[in-house]
Image (cartoon, rainbow, N blue to C red; front, top):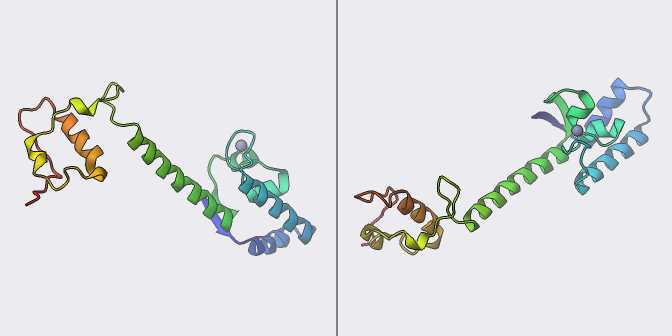
Amino acid sequence: MAFRGISISDYIVKHLKNNPKENEENLRNRLNKAIVDFEKGVKCDCGNEIWVIGSASVGNKCFTCITGESEPSDDYEISSVLHNKQTRRSSRNVENRESFKLNGIFDDKGNEVNIDIVPKPSLCISCINNDNPKEELFCNMTRHDQKDEQEFKCFAYKKTW
Ligand SMILES: [Zn+2]
């Protein structure tokens, strides 16, 4: 997706130049309404996020449903809306990472691994990361991966003393 960000007032100037018959106040109201709808989480019929600039003209729809093109190429979108879309996306990533942690460890077959049955190698006892809750998941994964190996190796190992 490559939208070009533009402020509301810059877009209105541009739009009025290309569409001299457009009523400025009317256009501004429609844009504001589309932004409010976007922020309320209104979606296109197909489930995508709405394209505010297009929606101001034809009603709340996404870029693809309005233009028939799959990706925008140098099409405009209101900057504050673009910023909002990016923030939403990155906060979703954090949620994913959290649920990964909460859900524990799964083996290749998708079964949850009971970490208590994976023995802690003696190497871990003298490691600075031992009993560090932030490292525990990674330590457990490392141990689980090597539970059938003769010799335990760990790249995160740091001696405590
Ligand atoms: Zn759509």
